Image 1 (cartoon, rainbow, N blue to C red):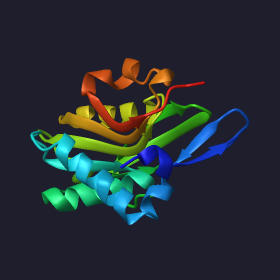
Image 2 (image 1 turned 45 degrees about the horizontal axis):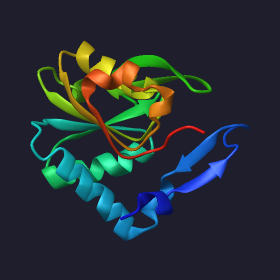
Image 3 (image 1 turned 45 degrees about the vertical axis):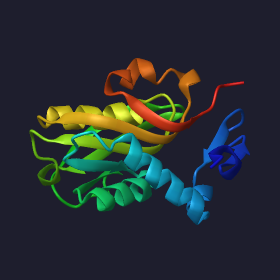
Length: 173
């Protein structure tokens, strides 16, 4: 499967100079969606994983498929103010702003190994924030997955120690 042909690329979104890689085109293409889920399963087949943390919003779709296949708990990392219960939170910088993610405290027990899933790995800030939440709660990051990686933004400097895995990498222009 050539994912590059499936992924929609939108120039100058959300601001001029940014090339947006839209993975929603994978979800409208069932063979491509199945390919991504199967590749995730292959990449982490030998990893001991106690649960999946999926990052809002496209990470929810990928993480839920993987969690269901492996019969693992699925935890949602949501934008600040979207979860009704007691939460732990972490703020981080984006390529073009700042944000905060939260996870329900009771959903994130200690002494577990969590796979963190998102659609795209750019600078690694979002994933690093979730990794900090995991570690602060006394658990371990078992791995990180993103469909797309942008290594030219040097995400390895932030999250390389977690061995992030991607299916397709784009180099900058």
